[in-house]
Length: 84
Image (tube, rainbow, N blue to C red):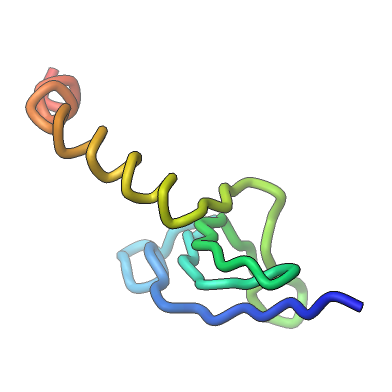
């Protein structure tokens, strides 16, 4: 039997005006004794409860570090692309 835990640490797009159709939830999780960070789009079901979609990514600590370094190293390019 494997234990899975999930702890939401951030929600993006819920408090915007208008709220995002599919807000992003960031959570810590563990699966089979390994720890991950999960970044996933959510939706509201018919009862108003947020549910996860299949649209997301789960990363290990090393993947997070590599991702953050890639963003940091390329921030000027990213910002210039958005300004076009």
